Length: 412
Image 1 (cartoon, rainbow, N blue to C red):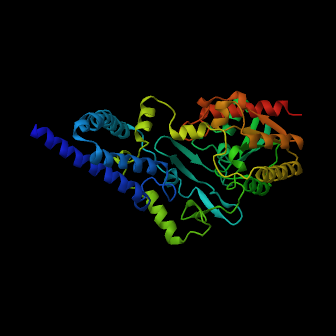
Image 2: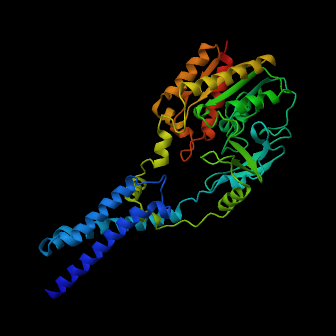
């Protein structure tokens, strides 16, 4: 009996101490900067605070006659489930591919530009490497991700746009322009004018500068985020020491050179992953069960959403994008090219077989202005994307190439 009483007293002290530590951690979480997106008591902190107070109450209030049955046993059961799962998670984390910042391997791909903020460097050769995918990137003497322009008797098609046009995470033989040439048996010569991260104003400026190109068609690969505030702001990004970086912090204050160097050093030498850090996050158990059940991860859930995944201003942003797109059509017409807009659905739109409302609005306005719109929503499936980050994989690029070829044939 004395041993049981000693055990119960020890458990009381231990449970009370754990509860107090949980309360302290919840209140100090902002200060120690652990998984806190914004200052203040968030949902996880509130749950941790409530759980800590309940543990402290259990240690102080529950009488000895009920303490073992209603406190100790449930905690032992919970621990016996949670700890093996934590061991499984550590094993899975050790075996999982390690994500890298691809910007490290892409140093010097970009050059600063006084108008667009940045552009592709001419004659670049390097490799995209994020720890999961490693592919070769090359640019020609014009700074475009394509071979040198050549004379051809085929139909010449100019592709303009952002990372989907550029071919992010795609090897040299898997880009949309290369697949168009392959699928058409050389009857089409496609030229890739895409730059990752460009929005409508930068795409328009890049098209204007490409005044040497003459072809039959220009195809703008429009993507959902071309309607975001960042993509419609030509001043957001620049280049520092060969890396593409933001000009300003979130509060609008420009970064200093010293701050850029600190951030680049952090990218080049990231801190080691803390395997036990998830134990401090109340979402950990649910996330681990999702991984074991192969359910969508939080990132995949975000990619599978339809609604805005960045800052939109609704009608105002659509009007801006439409204005830039019509200006692209004007430039193309001045050079004797027919203009088309291909709508690139993002993963969530493809999974749900419908566009986000803001994209539907853009499509309607384009058609109202007589612009030829090529849609491919029904041609795609989620398997045509890199599920971990949402760009087209080689199969998705092929379907895009097929849609453009069919759209060019069907266009009036």
